[in-house]
Image (cartoon, rainbow, N blue to C red; front, top):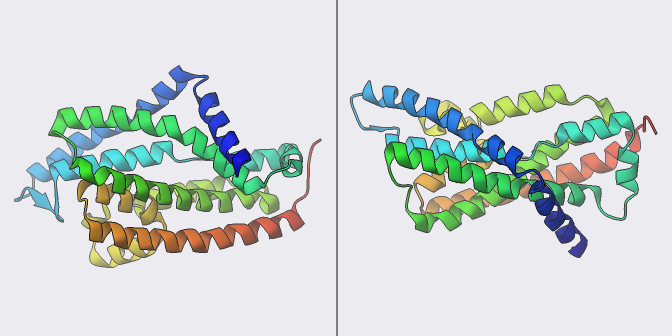
Length: 261
């Protein structure tokens, strides 16, 4: 595993080669959160209570801050794999003395680190100024663990889309569909708590909510029982998706046609 750790560290260092670009990308969260703040203030002002679906305005905006942080920092490498299939460079990657999937995991984990940190800092600064201090800090380590396993679930789902390029080459429609599923069933745009019961049940049974909703909800309502339930679900999905990715990779290799040169 030393070589994958080395790849991870190298990618972290490489991501610092363009600090201005990373900073501007991370600051995009300010635009989204500024809009969300005014939208949700109107929603709460027009309601007859300060608590909606178990969440206050303070909780909702901190939830959305972390959800946006997760969304803006998650890896998007499916189209990169597809492009490498189209131009033939995938052949060089597959011939390297390392596992292709673990290489992708190491590279994308390295890309995530500073983007995650900066996005969280910018988003937190804005929401802190708008609605007050963040949730109890004792829950942050639990949230970090939940985020990490959610990241693995997202990586696995994105890898499945990327590996589809071994067969169909063009995966942009799949990435678009996945993004919309994350937005809606993952609870990025609206906390799942605000959905009708039947849609809540569907959303919470699917892996998308374990990427976005689970960690963000734990962040605003840190609780050991909630954490244990979330972690159990995440581990189950990591195991299931890990098997699916492994199978898809082996079968995809048999159908892969190398283009270019």
